[in-house]
Image (cartoon, rainbow, N blue to C red; front, side, top):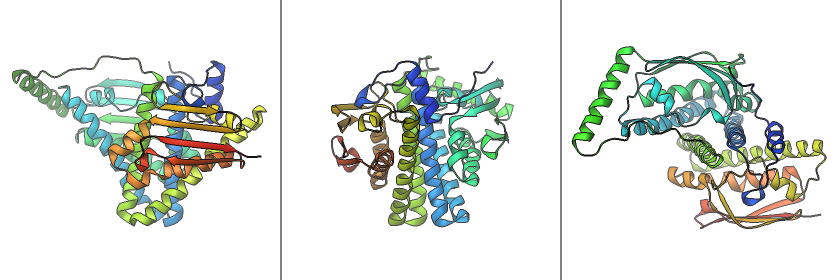
Length: 378
């Protein structure tokens, strides 16, 4: 039996958070649960990709945009599939369908409702009845690029994990169909060979005095872990889009496209928040904007210090952020700046023209902290 799917809109996510009586956490933002954070960040990640892809198409035309976005999506999948493969190999486990799905790099808590059938080492059928990513892609991304994302990324993950694994999509939500149907499969003989190779790796490691870990223990995913995991995915998506633009267009045109896309993404976020808050009868002041942000707090996933929050002023020093960690690890460099310098001021201005944001220090510029200084004028 599957749970009822609720689209991952800002209003839906906020309604669920308010119903649980959540209180402000780091930086004054509402402190989310694992489900809140997963759905909120999936919404942000998919909408960020959508605005980026749409800006590429608007500037270059769809014919030129499609191969760039396709290569970016495949790069995203290859990176993720390689990371998953390395973890499974380190544990001495088979590179088969079952272990690929067991060690997939995000959980269903990210707003995906579906069911598994006939799961085995060589085959799995997975029906997705609702998806937070598809919600945003269908709403915000040009359809050819939205479908391309769904068709390419899972296949790239699987092929990088093990070239013998194939993915078939009889139906996909972004095509306008009622659900996604995924069929992950590999020849039975290939699954058997993967089991033999895994045993050989384990035996060799044991003989060398370094036994492998084997299956990981099941752990409860909390809000902080969910936030870190999805922030990682967000950066991987953004980085590979930037990387393919750089390869195709060069530095200046890439930065220009990304900055315009991030301004539009930020403005959309602010407009959605403002419209929702007006319906609730809330004052559009700075305290409301920060407290009910579309990017909730999540334990120690990110750490804010020296926080001031009033209806007219908000400052904070962010000394730890999974975004900064992954942007640095991937080497996104100057192209990371648009995520902060363009998106955040645009979001504040779209929420209320009286709100301004300056960022005198930013970890992505090489500073030790990121300092955000919001002011609300008359």
